[in-house]
Amino acid sequence: MRDNLLTLRGMRNILPREKAKMNRIESEIRRLFKVYGFQEVETPTIEPLELFELKSGEEIRHRMYRFTDLGGREVVLRPEVTASVAKLVVQEMRSMPLPIKIGYILNVFRYDEPQHGRYREFKQGGFEIFGSKSPLADVEILEVSSRLMENLGIRDYYIKIGHEGVLRAILTRFGVEESIQDRVLGLIDKERLSEAFEILVSIQKDMEVIELIKKLWEIKSKNPSEALKKAEGILKDIPEAIEQLDNFREIIELAQASGVGELLVDMGFARGLDYYTGMIFEVYVKDLRIAVGGGGRYDKLTGLLGWDIPAVGCAPGIDRLSLVLNDDIVSKEDIVCLIVSMVKEGDLLASRLVSMLRARGIPAMIDPTRRDLSKALSYASKRGVKYVAIIGSKEVENNAVSLRDMEVGLQEELKPEQVVEKLLSYSV
RNA sequence: GCCGCUGUAGCGUAACCAGGCAGCGCGGUGGCCUGUGGAGCCACUUGUCCGAGUUCAAAUCUCGGCGGCGGCCCCA
View 1 (cartoon, rainbow, N blue to C red):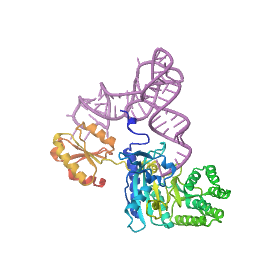
View 2 (cartoon, helix red, strand yellow):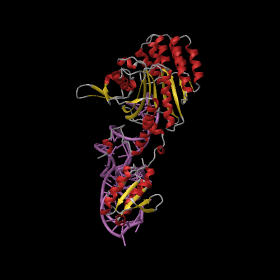
View 3 (tube, rainbow, N blue to C red):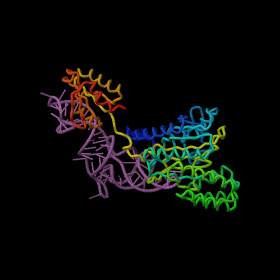
View 4 (cartoon, helix red, strand yellow):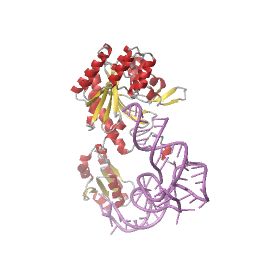
């Protein structure tokens, strides 16, 4: 049977080494949950279609795994987690003190064309803060994104940052309704400016709004204060936009003070998800064109679900981080001691020894094959096992084992207790 | 959704251009050698992605499908 008939396009088997890397990343994320006070939750894999029709954005919406269940409901495999977590908070946490800080590590599904770093099922971590409008919350999200990169030993990353509030304030000022705003921002994000402008022209807006957006869009700089200054000049006649820009400035200043990674300010930056209302960002690693994480502020989303509280969050991509990490971030250590019982009379001693080792947390196993000693050694060697405990009739008589150090090639006869003592430092 | 490259055993490959018995390495399984030869030796194991077409003859040439890899778009 051909494997490729059994594994769907865009899906994959995750092998031990890859899995170990993902585990490493996940444990780093969970450590940040603890240190920053995020409480981990899990939401349903399958959600009603409506949840993502609310505000997920056209891009994601037409790439959902979508079907009718046996009860006739239109359902989807979650294409992202933020909407689900927002729903969870609205449904279950109305009586909790604010701010509510939620973390998650969950798989998501998108029917994209697979390519480098892109699969149809992938895994995201997530940090979401509900109930605070303060820039301090925005900065905490930026900070946690930066810390994750650094804790994983990734130094050459930068954060592309923008502010949808500024763009939306301009559009609102010129009377562009929200659903049109979503479309226009989507086009701006794709750098399809002329199409965005066509829409604005078609609803009879004057050229001023187009000029403003064009000028703003051109501001892309690794010098945040310079970028902010330029933006201020452009927006000085629109107080609502200046207000948003002040918010952006505050976030950037606090972020720099708390040591987040290098910032690339992009005033024309918008994200595919329609629910963003303020600061937005994506995390990039040099030499990799795709984002390894992203996030932003979404103050209106929970309101649509029945509890109007501000929120900000981010989602690191676990598979993509794994792509960046070297294999050597995880140890290749496997079984420490392989026990080979060559004669039936040795099995009792072998069982006793393996239990003693495991009880002390030392990874050990009995070779269950009763093959030639040289084949057993070959197996141990290929698996990278450090010690082989050999039990033949001679050892059975002495109630001892011959412990062979596979790296040095020497061996000594020891009592089981002595073996445990010797290997104690390999305890996990 | 679009574009490019690609598809030979479990894995890595040769034969493809220029059509003519599909071969090698690794692995796996079994066996032989007093229990340290982490070996060796012997045997076995499994394959041209699928479907059409051209041809006396297709792994090889053509077309289509599917898959893989990468790019665009978008994102994680």
